[in-house]
Length: 103
Image: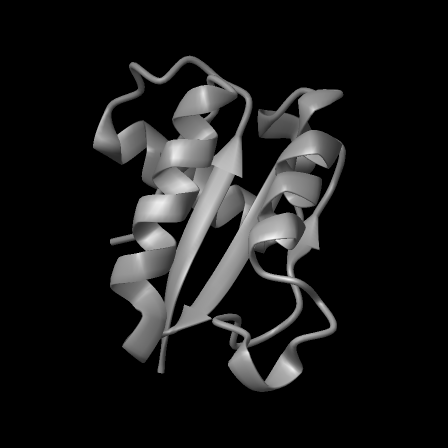
């Protein structure tokens, strides 16, 4: 089991229904709903600095990240979901990204 997150560069005033529709599009690899953002690479770099890829044993991720120039999809193990949720929301807010957990 995992806890999933979607992050993209969009106004953070989206309704939950609209955010879920965008998330579903992204997991179907339909990127028409997001715009490229140069900040995505910075987000991934910041995340990697907090959770180094080399530290596989202690990694909170249940699978590799899916991303494009306009979004990031993350999946973490349930036992680390509270910690990673705080981190993801903080990083997203700092970069003015929208972050959601799907319903």
